Length: 78
Image: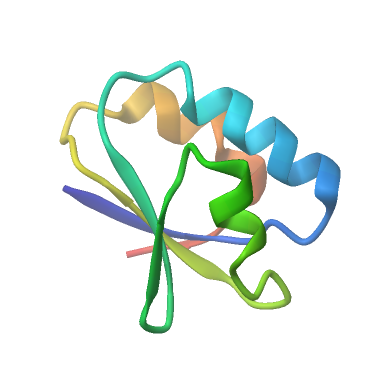
């Protein structure tokens, strides 16, 4: 499992992010505090507080291509 901090402050960023993660077969969650949603769900993402960085949990160790694609959204990597 890999974890990165991302920021999705604009509506078009959410759409781009969901289009990117939707192409990958492994499961991913977004965590904001105690709220957890499927990273591939636009409605789920909009239920989070997007004014702060949120944690993306990727349930795969072979996700280097994904990390390259979402680099514009990454704030810090753990």
